Length: 220
Image 1: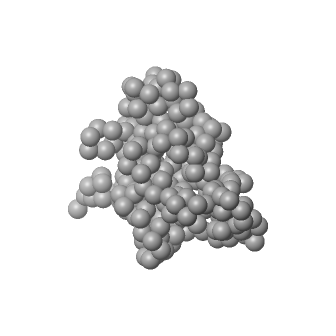
Image 2: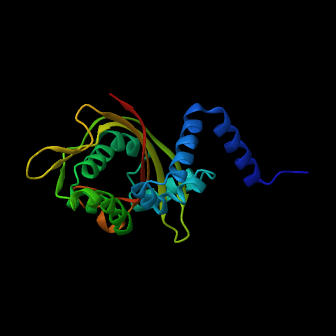
């Protein structure tokens, strides 16, 4: 009996998940995320319901060719460098600081609506964000995928250390979080490139079509 190519790919991926400690930890966090009853976490599940299945298949070479059709200067190495030095810091800062305009510029409408809904929980209480990102590391392009509408996307993971903090807009008192509580968080984000927006000075056409954030552990 000869295994189909897709079966071999799946077998290799299952072996990698079993042996790689990083992937194993991500799987544990994903399970905790799926089982959480927290309202804000529950509101984000719809955003990430398809991400897990995308890791089962590697179409990165095909996606790379499609990205070069959009922008002939595209390289995976260059995109990885741009992610680390500019794109990921900008997006994380936009989210943590509740910068509505920047978040809307970087995200598709559906993703923006979901992410902004998680922030509005605080903003509607008259709070303002004093959150900040302290460190970003392990920025990794996990895989590529071509969606049903022939849209190429790249799945990106990264880890941050950040302070989630909201203050009363009038008094300045801390209402959510603590100034000395540093959280380690893992993000999964799905990027595409919009040809019509290549000239956008902020995003250069990159758009986040899915994003999820999971708090791992706190450093006090």
